Image (cartoon, rainbow, N blue to C red; front, side, top):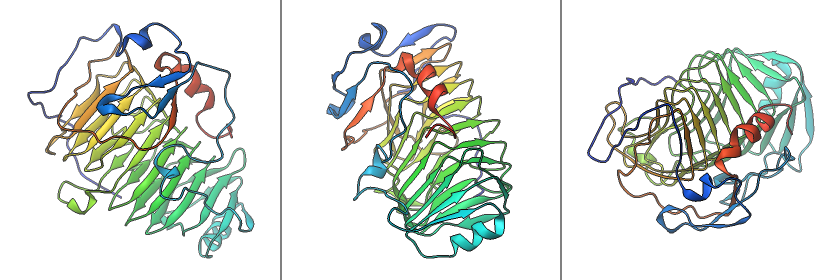
Length: 342
């Protein structure tokens, strides 16, 4: 849904900037080359990550890593019938049904506006599946999976997660050339993972948190963003309000205005990402929003500015996860992100 923001970052005493044009690695371990399997102690005392050496493109996971794996996990329409759809009428009819169900999308489906997705639903594309023109509204729903679909030309948002929706997994999709947000999460939604997606030819990519005055979001908006490819997109990767901890790891940022913005007391752990030609990898505070916290670890800054860090406390991530070496992220993510890789 539409939001308004100015693109002038705020500065404060904790921010720091660096010169572009060099490669910087945030930790000595990352600079040493491929990291062997082992425990990694994270900022704030987190010790949930296990680093893994680079490997051939992996098989896609069938369950989400990160926040969507908490709170009982996310299974979508598992156990329900599979319904095949190839046009807008059939898709909208399927979305009117109560779950659990698996909706298998094929071909190109043209929608308009936002179309509500019910609880206990999996929307999964066959190879080549595309939704264009409109978007999907996960509104006051729980246990939703959206995978393997190419979204383009949406007239509002491509995927909007809102109104207290929980346990949502957005995985292996692509997003290009739409109007507003590609994947926005807001209004007390929680336990969300956005993974292995390819974003291109777009401006405002991912908003987390509705507005500065929507303080009901405090204690919610726990989202994991991992192995996404931000391919020349402008901003909001994500732009965060209130959520803490938000986990941004193993993403490939290429030629973006900025990477992550943490505001309004949010707390974001940014680790193991590869920033290439990104003017501002992170912001603590943005536009007219108050500051939020950023902790960073094991990132690569290739031709990019230095991150802004500090701004408060990032809470510990409670789940276990695997962390790829940041220097391997461009090859890993470009080989595995987007539709056709599950």
